Image (tube, rainbow over all chains, first blue to last red; front, side, top):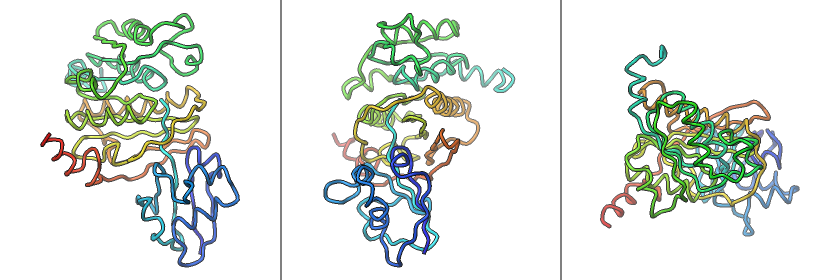
Length: 92
Length: 236
């Protein structure tokens, strides 16, 4: 199945704008992002902490709805889903 | 003014807007609110003008380097519109003074550069029931949202945890752009017209020239505006 992943701000600089990727049925939100990040050490470390969990400030969206970081492991991805991953921007 | 009518302009004249920060966001916001005729602007900042600020902090000029940002801001705003009142306060916003500084303003503009202070503004907005107009920038990216306390998602509902502090390059057009979104929201709120940017996070990517929004909702368990939090605060 095909899923579109969009990164924003610093994450976009590290991963690119829109990523269309294949995912096996039963893939969770966190597994999907880990697969994309596995070959990009800097990007991976920006999003995940040393325990492999999403850093607590990271905002996750699935089809326009917020997903809690704590639920990313049990949130399954479906064909055609649109995923967004972004950090709040802090400057003024 | 034709757009607002006399009644609308009078409303702006009677309004008091609190602007937290006279930097990249605060400069264009303060300038446009001043020339729109907002009667009273309070501008708070604790910094002095540095040469590195001048690519974006358009209230400050080369000749102001080394001067307090509040003094520089007040001078420019008064020159732009001598018919308004500008109160510039050289202070660091902290938990002990936020409420006193904000007083009974009609709106709080978040033009800060860090989340700890933004959370203080958010807390004050909730406690005083004053709307908060949020903006944030990084490079060519920006975000904005409007918070009506107790009715819409607050800053903590949207961003429960602060991102790590970092030093990043900024180009002036981004705070100019996001600042205008915030200033537009202030005017709409005061005039009671249009559709506010509430429960929506506006996201701007200047490099792609692409804007989008994310739908938000209140978190009933929010550490700042959740029902249980408010009850606890009242008990104290």
